[in-house]
Length: 106
Length: 119
Image (cartoon, rainbow over the protein chains, first blue to last red):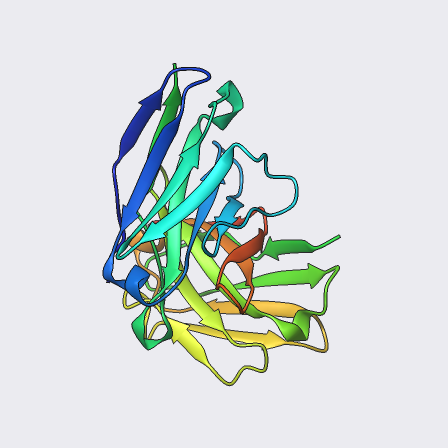
């Protein structure tokens, strides 16, 4: 199945932004969020319902409802400008990524 | 410190083969499912394949099924991806990533190795 994300989102510095990810697999499996900056490997920022790995600022949070998961950045910083991808397990043992959301901090 | 280091990328002609490796350190390699994820130039992430901790289960994206095989050597802390019948659309950076069981997240990633399929 597929995970659908908005291709691009913008936020003013210090404001709050929410990025969403929708797909059937999210009704059955937990989703996770990754931040990727140009030329770098992805970094896990949110997993499970709303868990942050150590080192991820607490301005990053997650939520889930039905077939949709959301990543919220409260008080966006310039360093948060990046591509964000969602991911989950899928039927038949596969895994799936969303198409990615390019976040611009204005 | 968990480290994943990919190697084996390079330039190959369409129809050719390539074997990627991922050397793992800093954790008990035999405890985790491992994955390969790729990214075509300027495009998003695409999951490629996964292998369970004891190699009992292997899964592949439809786009590579029948052409790629995944394997691991828990004694050597290494993960491999054998890529055959390569196509131009297989071009991209290939990352190995560690998966955790409870929520299925990919918590550690390597820096990637570039595969270019071109005549």
